[in-house]
Image 1 (cartoon, helix red, strand yellow):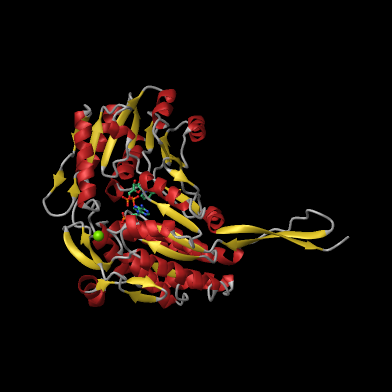
Image 2 (image 1 turned 135 degrees about the horizontal axis):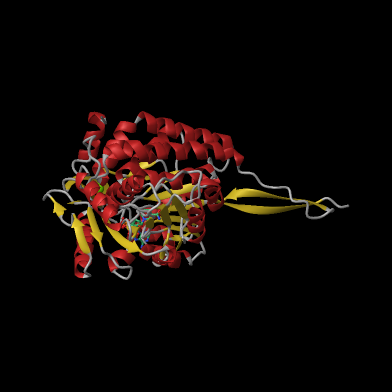
Length: 489
Ligand code: NAP
Ligand code: MG
């Protein structure tokens, strides 16, 4: 897998920035290290973009937008996206391995979930590129009036570390399909696959400057992108705290902003549900990707009549989860992405204990190398507790008993977030009632967690605003222009 080439490059080179079609060192000459979270060892050195580098990337993105890219037929943009998908498929093994080494995600999950989603996203938006239409709107008898949808221009894409390839592609593919150009700032702890995608885009034949990749620190490189007066749009996935900073930075030139932030999603189990399926999905809903999922079902709300049974079975699932080397095909759960993240999760476990929640299973670090934490289940959690209100972003399930429907809705809707929710019931009326009354951008009924590029994705309140995926993403990266042609009567 990957071949000697990749491994040499991962371990020996300082990975460069990708600006204007060239691999370049940072203007400052600085670099930073990215680690393998399964071992804590240094994986690679990466050039550290500063303000000057981000400016160069924005200028090359602007030049491409005004030049080769702006003059290209939409169908050719679509063909290039398909070509990129083909190259990703060719290099699948290498990309899976690189993503796993840099982020600690199990190869099995990347192969099953992330990579197919990346390819689906590319092919979906490749097909959209030449179907972005305006309307003829017969407003008056003395004019031909119509709209065209035009690309916004230069897009700054800032992404987190939990799904670097997939979330990156959720932004890159629709932006490019619409005819925008992109400056991508990956999370500093997982920069490697973003750089590789940038190189594959060049190999596919995208004109230079269409996709620039500038790894670096959020406070410097990310902020520079947000503050840049020639960036037209920032699409961001990350934490609410940084989301707020982005809104302030974007005020300078009134950039468009899309924010996909966190969640504290409720997964609600009624006694009339298929309890087997509900427990299985509840476990996957919180332990998948080591709980580092914005839509993780981190609060499991269980009707009091089945509470003890669900807790017991959930704990059994937690205990049987295969934790270990993410490169092993049989591993289901890898480490947390960083030492900082591990400490944050262990701190929250401490907070839960201090708040009086019952630790049913897990609760500790596993091993001494790497950032592994056991899948953890707290029962007897009360709605007001911090472990029920705050996003932990780790493999920690909070189980809360509820009395009836009103109680379940009060708890489910009672956090600052509104990203996703799940409900398990055999009662179709209740399923529809909950779908209507849950405050969430996505509601899953008798399933938990699937996403699809055709369906809008996003939240409200502390979960951010705007929607990605589907047609919504096309609207995010284009703007209608109204045209009047005076025809006379
Ligand atoms: P984060 O600190 O908000 O970072 C996200 C990205 O923003 C990173 O690339 C980061 O760079 C950059 N950044 C940091 N400060 C910045 C600034 N002042 N200006 C511009 N960019 C800046 O979040 P994280 O710790 O990487 O990820 C975990 C959080 O993301 C969780 O709260 C989770 O809920 C949320 N998330 C949401 C979704 C969703 O779809 N809604 C998906 C995944 C994650 P550095 O890496 O250098 O700090
Ligand atoms: Mg790393």
